[in-house]
Length: 117
Image 1 (cartoon, rainbow, N blue to C red):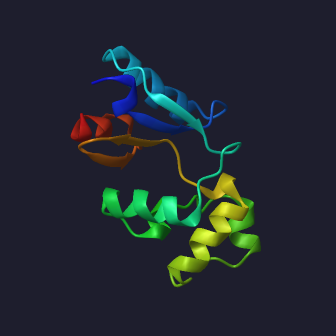
Image 2 (cartoon, rainbow, N blue to C red):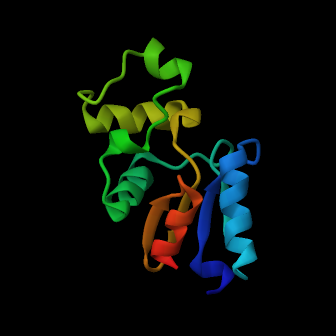
């Protein structure tokens, strides 16, 4: 797998995100790194990622973040509203998101990356 074939949506301050990046590198993969807090994906990009991962938008949100509670978000919140809120508050995006030609996974636990290698 080449650099252009693997992408990780990464937060270098997150230990789980660092583990996901290291997991790829240990397998000889140098992923394209998207620091999503700086280079925030659009709502359409997030929708595409979650659709490829086969998960609901709510499954890609960090429910333990204070802003999640402050904004009154829940599993019943319409997906389009969740997506827009994630764009406006990118720390709500669950990480790391790993993308390969075989699919997309939120790498929690890290080993789920194997499913798309």
